[in-house]
Amino acid sequence: METTVCPWCQTEIVWDEELGPEEECPYCHNELNGYRTLNINIGDEIDDSDEEFEAQDIANDKEQVSDLTSLWGDEVELKLPELRTLNKYADEGNDLILYEQGVEKQLDQQEEVPECPHCREFMILAGSQAATQDTFTPIANAASGKGSVLSPPFTVLTYVCSGCFQVQYSLSEDDRLKLIQNLSSH
Image: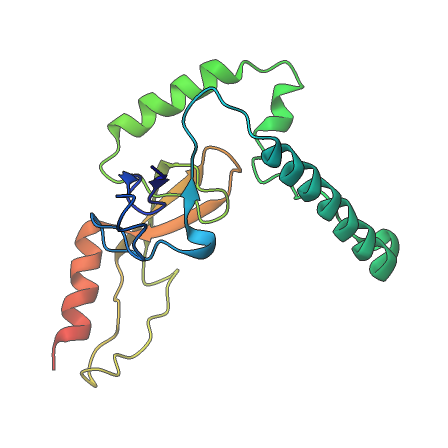
């Protein structure tokens, strides 16, 4: 009997030998063929063909790197850039375990916990900024023809990524509602 794990819902699917594998998962109804399917042999048996495929994959990777190097010379970056800036501070003697614990405590206190668009780490609410008549010039509301899209005063929340330290801004909850009301009124 062949065992398949659905890459979408992570459910183990055991197919009937008489019927054979289906083209879609019986649980989540997503497609199960080609590169989207993962077949796993469970047991202590080691198949020699697996070792052949692994060696072949390594040879293919080396060939692709060599092709890129011959095309682009030394300009080829063979290693992905590290997005998590935090890792460089570990080398400077900082206790990153304590940092991570502090981040977790701070995240537990937040109502919203956005994900960083750069590295997918969670973002910490660092504070808020008030936009006033002096610091913000509103744009006219094209939906209603009167007023502006967002009128000061309003509050912008400032989030900082705990991994790569990118900064992101978001409107406060009350000001989101004002924006929705401004754009939906006719």
